[in-house]
Image 1: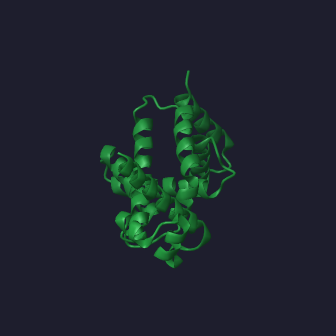
Image 2: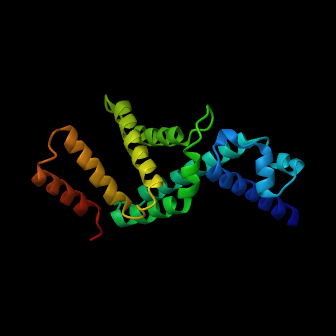
Image 3: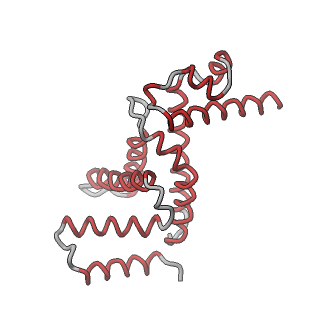
Length: 202
């Protein structure tokens, strides 16, 4: 039991060291020696846990995408879904993981691309319940919008709460702008009011 706990602690320390290094230098410039020094482990110990830095990054990507999936399941499992519940779950996810996600978003390799992984997940979720003639195009657009918003949210630490309200406002403003209806304040207010009524607890 003690050996198992020690193994998990070392595993966690190596991952933490890797994330700390991502704050200091680009992924491409990080070498195993850097991770050994940051984690204060020897080379043989490192290779008992990971074969290289790519495996660490791949595991982290899988972990954070899985965490997002859990958040989605929690949100979709609450029917009707209310803004306050979405805000609590999304704020908890992004506030807790913002630093790591921000670092991982900088890595782009054939196997490691958390932005593409998140888009793929959202596309699959959309297509699971939508089967219209333009479903794939809609799924792609939805994924790009959602992940684009997430990326901006993660990179701007001054945005900490009101995730769903900000998303709705940004999406609505952009949509009305595309349709040249951005100056139609009456329509905008009517849509926002309808969304709030539908997604607020009674």
